[in-house]
Image 1 (spheres, rainbow, N blue to C red):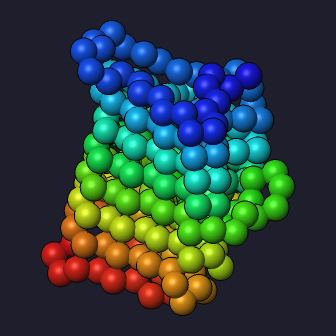
Image 2: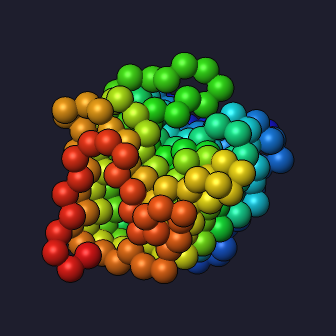
Length: 232
């Protein structure tokens, strides 16, 4: 079964304060994430915490954030998390959920609709949930992750929902979009398909480098408006 499930208005801190021991979370359930966040719950993750070595067919293998849940990543690592069928391997954000990445590492994850991070639109097992799912990257690093369907080894948004993706720092490196059968692959680091007029995608700062795909090694915008600052 999954390691942790958080719901209601619970707040869970992993590795906070004076905690100095290493904490490793894995899942032996190949249909569920290591951590599920639902309701209006909040998970805060800090250094010395590792979510790893998980495969899930129905949700993100690492962290699934649904409803109005919030995942704040201040440190630690999400690594070796894979979803071969439905959504991103590392973290998937749906409904009105939010993922704020301040620091830490997402490494060697793979999935469909995003290798490391997927934002709304791609249903897990079940219907698409309406909402303004959000991913805000302030720092940290996403690396060595692969999307095996469309593209966006680092970040993928394929949705009609009014989602938001804002990158204000951090690095996306060594990611790839190999596509179905290795033939397509759009956007090694970032793939964007948004049709809502209220969707917001901004890349204001940070580093996107050494990524690869058949088309658009750094980023591929299939539909929607994306703002990219000079020097990124």
